[in-house]
Image (tube, rainbow, N blue to C red; front, top):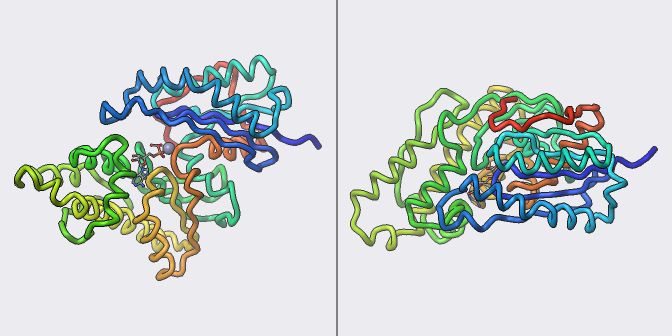
Length: 332
Ligand code: KG4
Ligand code: ZN
């Protein structure tokens, strides 16, 4: 039987990614981070689209070269269909459609959030079905019950801001550059997580809310003098991080009890957070869970996760029509 060789493309937000997967094994995974958004304190959609246009050809070329795969050998092209910024998705999907048409191969439309979950299937050990995944990124915060690679139920989610958004927005209030999440994580290492207490949200079980936390940090700081943030930066970062991680873990623990599950995973950009990883592993030991965290480079946005999702969809013959459109909002 011929090998299944898939080129995968990711362009849903501010990272342009391409990866090559051969028979389910990742051969290359290239990401170009867009620096252009830094000075604006958040992703500027139009600038993201333009940067994707500049990056996509070199990123795809490098991914193919590194994998040692010629484009003529490809079996299919997988691409993020949504959810994400429409203009950014259009660059990836238009490129993928054109390449698939020229090569006369099928095209696979991948759900970005399902791909974050499927990042657990890139390396060993892989979680055993059914498992629960806390998917935490810049745009989403979801508790997902995963019954099979193509059978996922959202059992809880944020009612307003995502956890990554909370990290970034609070980091911005503290004067940190975008994306503030990783910087806040670094600064928190030297702070005391119990220095400041911020209110936890009251929402129905298994759901989240982070907009109140952002407001409570803002109001708290308004009452302080000018140098307060500078003088207490490490403690503020550690306390905010501790609050977000506590909120995330509380509902995850409830979900495992409610569904009687001990295979537990985290995914998405915020799963790169050092405190979340630590508390997740500790809780796993206490509760006798089997825990799984993807490799660091498969947590934040990347095309390897699109490639593994694409591989499974290829096996199922789950292809798109040539004229499919990307979708900015996409429930599953
Ligand atoms: O999954 P992702 O790369 O992109 C989306 O699909 O949104 O997640 C990006 C988010 C950003 O909000 C970023 O600040 C956050 O993940 N993030 C972190 C860390 N690394 C990335 N948040 C906290 N601590 C980190 N170490
Ligand atoms: Zn993502």
